[in-house]
Amino acid sequence: SYALAQPPSVSVAPGQTARIPCGGDNIGSKSVHWYQQKPGQAPVLVVFDDSDRPSGIPDRFSGSNSGNTATLTITRVDAGDEADYYCQLWDNRGDHSWVFGGGTKLTVL
Amino acid sequence: QVRLQESGPGLVKPSETLSLTCNVSSGSIRDFYWGWVRQPPGRGLEWIAYMYFSGTTYYNPTLKSRVTISVDTPANQFYLQLTSVTPADTAVYFCARVWGGSYCDNWGQGTPVTVSS
Image (cartoon, rainbow over all chains, first blue to last red):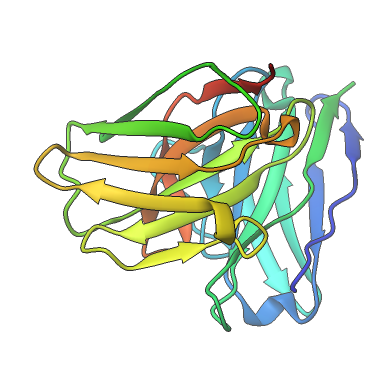
């Protein structure tokens, strides 16, 4: 089955840019979605279809996807961005499964 | 904005069946996909199942033999049943609206379920 790999943690200083990778075999050929989850809360969709943002999500959040890596980029990071981030895709082969990455804890130093 | 609210027992005994309800408000259940995702304590997200409002269902292969997802369109609710539960099924269970069957654009707040005797 298809697998997505995320680093367990990423750290960044306030005001800097955070980049969270999501690796998968030829992931660039698939649509990748990203969720932010703060402790004790439900996930929130922050990027869909590789690089689109839902209404209400700041343009500091952006996504890209090429080759074997999709990336969530957060510019001008602040303390409120500290959270777990999950990538996810829909595998349209076979049983139409969803796949989640293991999640990345973003720490704002 | 559509709102989703999970409900169900917080505690289930091993080998019993877990039944959860997701109530959808401020929007219709028609014309959308709906799904369930769970999160064991301290761990990541795991998809369970999703379905189109008209009845087509999709299941996580690792859970398929124990899971049923269903919908009651007039009641604007959808449901999850998980049979033969074990402590490994202890998790927060989220219901969500699924856009095009691909991603979850609206989530419930989640309901914690503990499997213990």
